[in-house]
Length: 230
Image 1 (cartoon, helix red, strand yellow):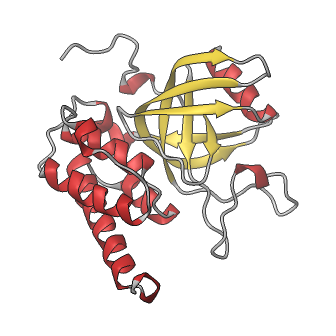
Image 2 (cartoon, helix red, strand yellow; image 1 turned 120 degrees about the vertical axis):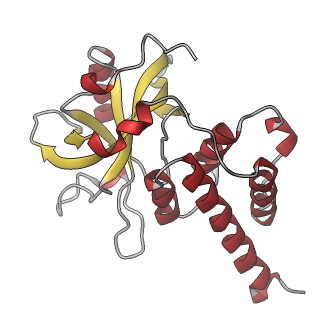
């Protein structure tokens, strides 16, 4: 496979990374995440990234007392929202402006990172010092997924059926297992800790197995719930 000439190599990954803490939104290597940017600080972050290396880190805020605090809560008096240690950096591969002052961007996943420390800055958004070394393999040619693709489709279909969300597995007929795994991991309405576990999975095969297990457990829990019985 020909290497994308715009794809950064490991040695060129930045030493400082702007991060976008967003509950329930994860990015994975080689996957794409569309984002609608409208908040002033994240418009500033996006414009700065466009003028530099186009890199932004997606990371989830931690849950606080079983309630979600998303990026909008960071101006509260108790300080910045706690975030998970591991996120994924993406490169802005397309963007468009809207007439009402928003930016619509697509982030293409490059490499996961561990937050080393936060960097003090006068910028309105957060900057971290990313540690890339343990995720260097994210930049290597994609691996084959040792998992039954039909099983992934089946458990996802059952999970979404219980959520009353339509899912057409035939739409992914020609999609490879790694791509489908990442799409489902990013888009299924799983809980925040489950989403984070999928980000931190060692590789795509481990992520696929975890995704199947999470969907099966959620489906079994739904089926066993008294409220679902008639």
